[in-house]
Structures are given as C-alpha cells and as structure tokens.
Image (cartoon, rainbow, N blue to C red):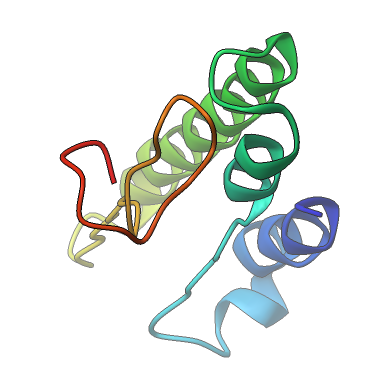
Amino acid sequence: VDNGCKTHLYPALYDEEQLQQWNVLIAHFLGVDHVGHRYHMNHPKMAEKLGEMNTMIENVTQWIKQYKQTHADEDVLLLIFGDHGMTATGDHGGATKDE
C-alpha cells in the first residue's frame, strides 16, 4: 500500500523539474495501519513494515542533508507523526491509553 507513495515521493525530491513545482510535500503512508489491522502490532510483518518506514525516513533525511549543501539559505522542515496509537490486537480510534 505504500509503494505508490514512494513511487511519487522520490521523484518529487530528486527530479529537479518536479522539485521546483512544490513548496509543501505531504506523504501519507498507510502501511503501518494496514499491517496492524491485519497482523497486529507484535507480528513479524509489523517489524518488517516499520523497518521499511525507517529506511524511507533515512532516505528523506539524507536527501535533506544533500539539498542543504547546495541550498543553504532555504529552510527545510521534516515532520513525522502518527494520527493515532494502536492496541496489541490492532484496534485504534477508541478511548484506551494505547489508542
């Protein structure tokens, strides 16, 4: 489910023509949520998906470092957040502490 997001994210960063077309870029990855519902949070598939997201974040932070070397006067802000938590059984959106 995140492949489409990555398909568009990386060209938006690395293609100079696309890079000039935006001031704000939002990438909304849904895979962790999907894996949580299907397999639950302690399943090996969740560890795999979290690793994939860590790699994506590392790639974006590396891009920021490279970009700032040639665009030192431009501000870059990276925000990473989740919209909710999850219980051990994959539920979310309720009133428990984990959610």
